[in-house]
Length: 411
Image (cartoon, rainbow, N blue to C red):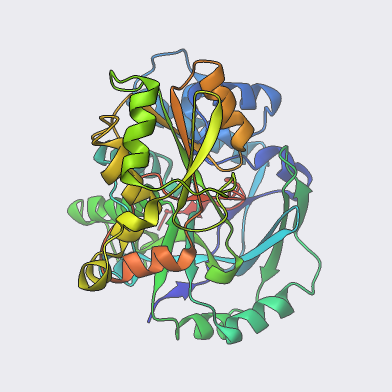
């Protein structure tokens, strides 16, 4: 069973919270981060992406030192306060008709290392090192990890009760997502209920979780880890899987690998049959839409999926993103590794089919692919057998804001 505990974070003062809370560090590039900070001078993005405060080309060491300077400065200005005792928080997000409520808590590095916090993707060492060095320099974990679990009626009832009180924070961000935070001071019931949950699953934040583990390891090597050291834990927001909203994660390929448009279309349709009445976006798992030339076509890629024992042992091989990569993108378009090949890029499903079609018409891409979203149960099934999801296969909306909670690593 997993450990989900209350904690005492740094959090923004209420009057400035809407300006301090920022998008996650990894959904914006440097140019976008600089523009965000220019528009929101109090934004926590100054800490997450400290290069925005420095000349272009600054080193990682300079950036990490700047992150510490910025966070210390925000505390000195009275923009953050330290919670007086360990608490839980409820974090409710509303985007249109979609509502999701997570418990903000301290989760366990031991659980992660014992695979009770389950993973579904590989991490890139350079990204882990970058976040690890920032956490160590700032002495804080600066961004939350997005976890989920299989539904639990006891936890649901406690969460529902907690939402009856007045919110600590209530604001709407620049993309029209409403964020509300509620304080839970009576923590025993919720901690006990989570103690009956067999496993948590990383929805988003694999690199931050790996960095939290690396922080503890670094402290162990330095002989600095006591039983109460905060590096045994990490900051997370834990949602029931029934609340989560996953969008498609779509593919755009810059060229046709030396083939003509007609050759590529024929090669794709030779692999997977055309769906005569297919819709865009695709209406079900197994259907993939692609735009080439001047129109969309929908194929049934599910005919290429394995069955029986192979599907059970490696469930990721039945997913549309895997089949598209293995059967079409690699052999036809020469996209060998979608994580590193510069000829492919990805857009989340919040960008609709018109934008993908326009990318071809404007010459940004030669062909685009629109996928049906994976289900949270797909991710859990893959994680449960210690496999990994295809790269770039999940896009969660809405995104968690950073800076609402900062996990203090000072012992």
